[in-house]
Length: 267
Image (tube, rainbow, N blue to C red; front, side, top):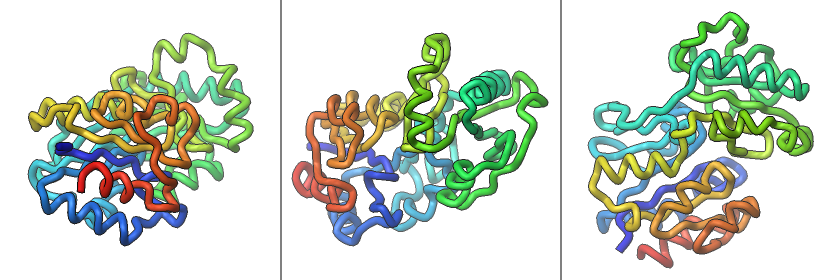
């Protein structure tokens, strides 16, 4: 029996209106009633996840959330961070320089200053709007090399980002975990930061074997947890690369694909 279900949010748990459907809420509630644990695993900051955690009753002791694509894992009762793998100001400056070279925008998340960008742009405002946060303009060149940065991102128009990705130097791919989390966002993470590493940390903390977990997602930043989990599921609307590593492909996020997985494999 599966004991834990890890769910990506945007494009997976949430429909295109950024809502959890009633069918999905009911399926999760029924699974929780028989002791199955649910973990939301997202590229979002915690602030952008709290309303959904509350809706699903994922709160209190021994409940966990994976945020910033696995850069941080927090136990919700105590607020204790049980896993942290982040970057530095030096890294943020390197990603900013690459973005300028590619003529694209960027932003980052500082552990002390929140969301920061060297120049206000429409794509950073998408981040702000979706997560209900403020993005502050900061001169990245003035960041101290050791400034704690959770993750850095190149953000821009979908086609521009797609065309730019092959131009990213191999050295960046060796230094960072580089994943595309949505059509507008390319993320540069600590090499030990991923949703897969985060699930392993939760497994170590709780004693739930990773083979007793289901992981569901739709994008490249979900691939590692989908590969590691006992059952890895790609949404019907997932990127092709995500479907390729999945054990099972469910319906789309508009067709209650998450509910379908829970009903089929848990209930």
